[in-house]
Length: 308
Image (tube, rainbow, N blue to C red; front, side, top):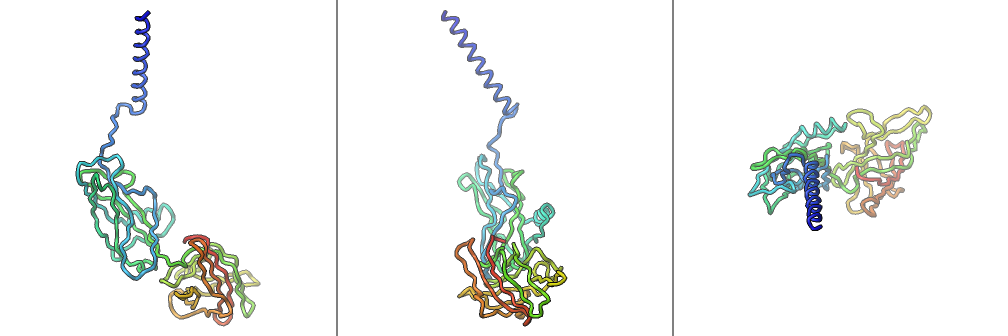
């Protein structure tokens, strides 16, 4: 009886070992997993990142990305990782997404380092650049980064590139829903309201340019034109391209320039509140009343809907 029991137990053990072996082969086949390879990569796998900076005319150092060793890499010493800017990454992103970002010129920024040393105790380090945020307000800039060389290691096949949108914003910058009216003294034109996703784009620390993506009158105004409608025919016409200027102490609108920063084209009506109010990062409103060319009276309420 004991022999039979021993024989059965031995058979069960052999079958169990066989099943374990089969399971291993099903998962790995004839390959031996290699988890020790030294691989350098960018830590953020997202296809795009946005770096939002406050407006400033002072040169700043900012982190645009982070380099790291792959989580299972086991370096035996220091690993030198080199990287560079790549305008091609920006061009490829534009092609794939129908965007028109401009690769930031080398004249507008400087890498703090183009080579970082990683090891077992310092597995991740930031990629930092130096720039003046004020240099970036006149276009939609982006930075493409690519790992170019890894000494005593490998470049990641998946996370070797980064696309970073460089955004400079003051507190008024964003997307808004606009309600109100435009009254023509001659009764020919009227305003088009409500308007959603109207943008305010930072021009400097205390000024923002008007953007309305629903209308474009072609270069050089493009989305910057305030559009009015013929009350009889429904035909569109552009009125002007406003730049709102705020008082830094009161957040009141104190002037309305053409968005080239030249002479005033609008006159703030003192009977209106003309006030920007911020109760939180997503709770912003400003109301304004102003006159244009002595003929049009525009009264508006701008309610913040999100970042631009």
